[in-house]
Amino acid sequence: MGRKIYVLAGCAVGLAGLLLTATACNAGQGPFRQVQFCFVGQSDIPQLKDRLKQVAADYHLAYRDISDTAFDQLKRTGVLSKQNKSRSAYIDVYADREDGMGFGAGNLSLGDDQVAIAFTAGGDLATAQRLAGQTVAELQKTWQIHEVAANSGAFPLDCSHAR
Image 1: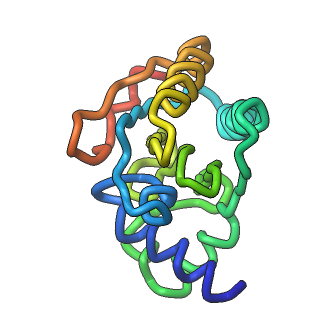
Image 2 (image 1 turned 30 degrees about the horizontal axis):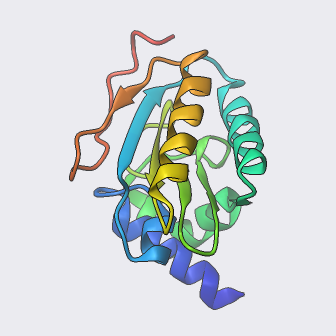
């Protein structure tokens, strides 16, 4: 268990500036689609996690919210010492299948007021594309979604307009 947490935290740290998804680490592939958006209110993080958990259930994906555990690991390793990241605003959630299809959502290298979500195909690109499409469509009902350029990472957005 301890080793898995270190591996997941290592994936999160290693990919934070490049690709925000542990599923990419697990499956050995990068994401085929990434999106990011700004939050507009204090209830947005729990609302996001609830929506992602529901999408994961719809697609029979294993959902894991390791936000608190990863926050503690990153704090101990000093990664968060240069960021003013609060525990309540830190996001590190994943949902995937054994073949690596799924998504990861996080905001390690972003502000507390935003998140990026990356989707990986695993062994089933067609289903993964439906998953990404459904997820983004659901999130667009509440937030203004920005597509992240291919082969790029998510960069902090100016979220001053979102509130």
